[in-house]
Image (cartoon, rainbow, N blue to C red):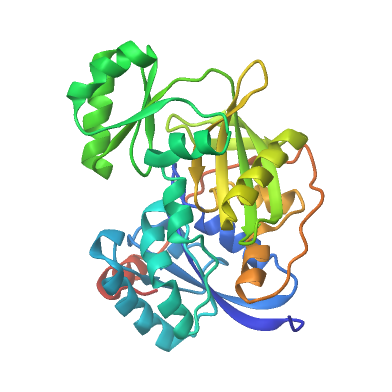
Length: 349
């Protein structure tokens, strides 16, 4: 890549709230890149997403239609944005939007927009409803689970798995339930928010660990950084975490990438039991919200993804700094109501 080549990168996930999207952390990583001068386009869904208004993050923002509007509506909006901005690389950061972006990636390339995403087959294989079958097939430790469509199926799972039960939405959120009533309540809450099916998983006791990793699409691991949560919110999100020195966790990510030939970023949510077994609880098909910790530890995954999206060969990272800690914080921004009205009325800022 030419030194300080100018590129335009579009990023979703600007909702830097108590359950944050990865967008702001991804933008920070991309801006920290040394090889290019970057212009950032923020893509938002809501007019109050904090990333729209944060100074030094997105140079320009546009609202895009919700994933439920379908790929055609998204394509029409991106065609309008592309005419104005000439985007080089687009990085989606939400599970629910990935299907549309994966489907549109050939058309986006024709428009001059590169992505670096898993295939539809890779995306489906690690889905929560397919996780047990995928892990069993490939010899990963995984909790037993069941995909259900009615609360009438819960009593049978109580007998099979015992308490506590983990009740999960198909995209996000999970509740640990100690009674049938709690499980029924969690079912209805998640159904209302994310729709059916609901996944019920057996509870595994251990130490919760997350691994952020990046695959090149051929089976090679470009980066893998494990992290242990130091502070967890009531929504189960990491508010602080520290990088770990553990080759077995790096090897777990490498095995996943080798088996799937994963293309792009992802996160392994792992529960390591007392006897050291790493149970895969979830596989998130995009960068996690804490991805900037990989930058701080010496492996800039967002920068590496942009380079690969642009066709550049990227050498795998071979080390990272252990004991690097991230601590998230809240910050009150003051903006003029005119900015909010501009976004609400015109979908741009």
